[in-house]
Image 1 (cartoon, rainbow, N blue to C red):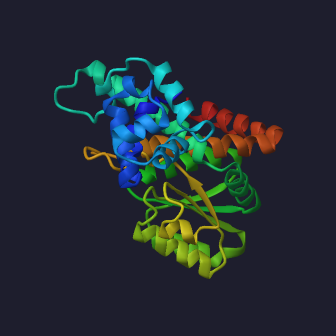
Image 2: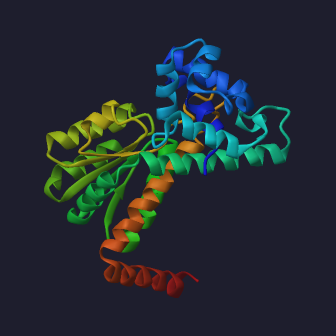
Length: 282
């Protein structure tokens, strides 16, 4: 289960100024807050009781502020430095602890925000279309490559390229049989947006994997698969780490759901592809 303190720490900048006061007070006075009523926390943080209630509901949708206090109590005296970004003084053990906590949080949050309806809709398009055009830039291409490696094993024709012109030509000439799958964490990469616009023009359905459903890409897509975005405000984000983990998790969910929808046939294909590799390349 993800630490609620870690959740507050990472989501803090997404709140209103008044709600940020509540969050900062909780982070600075965790043990005291466990004993506080809504009114007492509101007074201590200098906000209204409605703000405290709203903050609690966002963090703990099923129980609000009372549930938030219970989670804080259950977590006990957790080392607060684990919630900070990586710093030069960190030991290897501290870095391992921080990253493992972040990975667990990322997967849990992605699972929470990802719509079952969107997963089913994406898999239906993938099943119906004979060709999947696939694009991701930079770290997103790591995720696109993983998607390609998985789906070609179950008989799907995946056209994955960094050449946007090649993808554009393919979609244009095979529009009726195609679906476009775009991976972009921000949803604002110009290459992905241009491909999505072209796809819409030639009536090719678009699936977008992104952290932001309201991004330009999200607004163009027929199906939006959401991944967790809670660490986008980290100032020391030297590389796309948690976003890649989140997106790989979504691809895994998509893939295993796809296999389950026609289990016997897909298992035969997996066995066949594995046998071919073992026979000719081992």
